[in-house]
Image 1 (cartoon, rainbow, N blue to C red):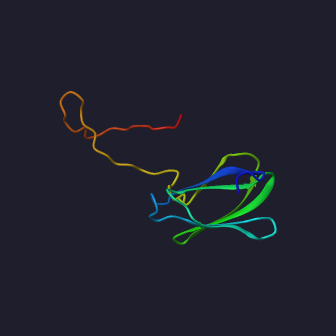
Image 2: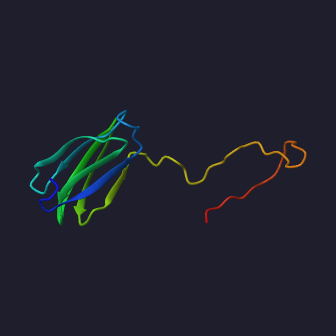
Image 3: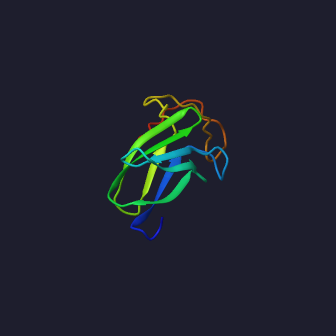
Length: 117
């Protein structure tokens, strides 16, 4: 509850739906394994008041994925969790159609090297 030494935190889940559609089910436990919160996110975000300098366990489920992670509440902050699985390979080939800027003709052959900054 607000006003009794609790601070406002946000927990954001990436990879869920929007508004109230396809949201994560979230349970938050305190260090004594008591349920502090049991509900759903809205737009992937959960806003609640928790006691400062305490450890909580966040257990969230979305479809067949489960996130179970401790959080340490230090100040009013946003904790971010992701339901997106990392399935992108590190080396992959991409094919696309490239046309000439001036004549709008397709470029049939060439090599482009891409890198991250």
